[in-house]
Length: 197
Image (cartoon, rainbow, N blue to C red; front, side, top):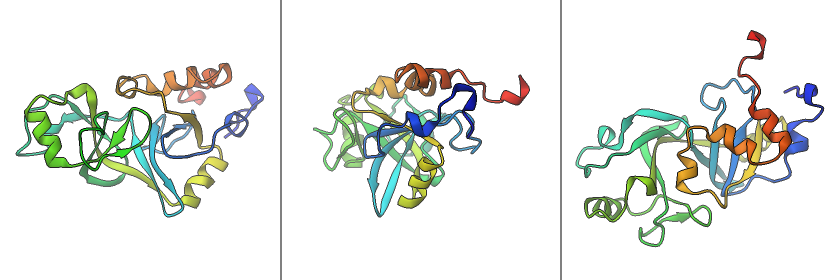
């Protein structure tokens, strides 16, 4: 990617290394149909496993469209990535109450006991603003992800203070960049198709 008009590169902006609980923000001109202008929350970053979920790809379905025998629950489903798109995954804030939850950051968890989750929903013990559902996930080979970062595909940001409300913001890609620094904010204003301007 050529950022010469701004006299700096993604590599110069990246002060953080990838790790569990950090965000991968797609550089402005990424053309990949899955990851274009995406924000991915890394839920694992290990030598043998790197994966996470795209946070800003809403689908026009609800969790009750996807699952039968599930309590009525008015929440949208998102496309988490191109891997395993027939399976449902979830990020939530109730890790202290859902057994088997994996902590991502101070406030966010993923997975956990599914039957327990269903019971909590049926009993109004968890609400739509506390959980986010995904079909599929985003996965990389360790070297593949690091090569993509080296080749300036991803800007890395800390997600430790993000709330579920932040994750549901439809302007997540733009807002995340704008909240990082003035140089990052300039990237958020780049047109998707500069050749059309």
